[in-house]
Length: 141
Image 1 (cartoon, one colour):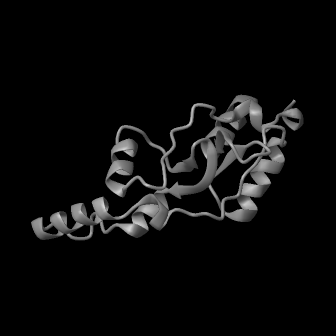
Image 2 (cartoon, rainbow, N blue to C red; image 1 turned 180 degrees about the vertical axis):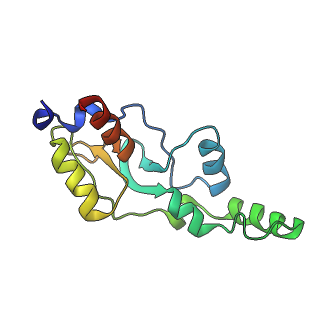
């Protein structure tokens, strides 16, 4: 059974995305109520990049300085920094018909926590994450 599973069987289809023109303050508002660690960046439906939680942490200094001055500086920086400035454009992707083992191998080899699922035109169809793979593994075991 497990060897026949495809990315389409476990991927998240309803994906929250952001645009290159979004600023980091907008991204943090999107992330606030959720526990996403990867946000695909799209132009229409076409995937153009990915923004990870790690990218955001590297772009901000949250938690390092708790002073009021630092908070104001951080707020300004979040408004003035855009997704296009910090996103990764070298995105490792997968297809719906890729086997789960191949997708997991790709994640390990490329040291990524999620793979956007795209069609032949690079239009975003979903995303498969470490959590999706673990959920599947728990179900199988």
